[in-house]
Amino acid sequence: MTDLENYLQTYFDFDQTDLVKVASFFKPEILKKGDYYLKTGKPCNKLSFIKSGLLRIYVDLEDREVTQWICTQGYFVTDLASLVFASPARWNIQALADTAIYTIEKQDYDRLGDYIPKWPVTEKLFIAHCFTTLEDRVFSFLSMTAEQRYNLLFESHRDIFTQVPLQYIASMLGMTPETISRIRRKQLS
Image (cartoon, rainbow, N blue to C red; front, side, top):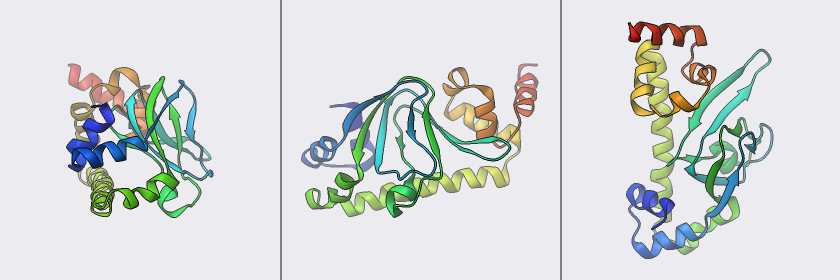
C-alpha cells in the first residue's frame, strides 16, 4: 500500500477496491524548494496529498506576509474555497523544501462520485475535518495565550521547528519573531 492509500484508509475507511480506485486518480509530482503550488488570484484546480516535504500557505499583504499554515507529510493541501467554488485563490502555496505530492485534478475529483458510491459521505467527512481544523485554530487564537499556542504547535508539529524559519512559525501563531524568541528563552531557563 502507498503512503496515500494508507492515509486514505485510516482517515476515510474505504474498502480495498474503492481505496485503489480513489488512489489511482492521484498522480505523483515533485515540487522543488521555492516552487509554487499555487499563487494568489489564480484558480486552484487540484487537491494534493503531501508524501514528503513542506509547503507554506501564506498571503502577501501591503506591509507583510502572513503565514496561514505549514503543511507537512501526511496532510492534504489546496485552497479549498477556490477548489470548491472556482473562485480565485486567496493563498500562495510554496515549497519550503523539495516536496513530493500526489495530486488529483479538479475534474477527476468532481467525478469520484461516479466511481465510488460512498464518495458523497466521504467527501462530507473530509470537508467537516477541514472545518473542524479551522475551528480549532480560531478557538486557540481566541482562548489561548501566545505561549499556550506555541506549546500546542510545538507538541503537535515538533518537526517544523527545526525545518522552518522562525518568522513563518511566528506569523502562523499570530505573533512577532521577538515574542516567539522570548517564549523559547523562557522555556530554556
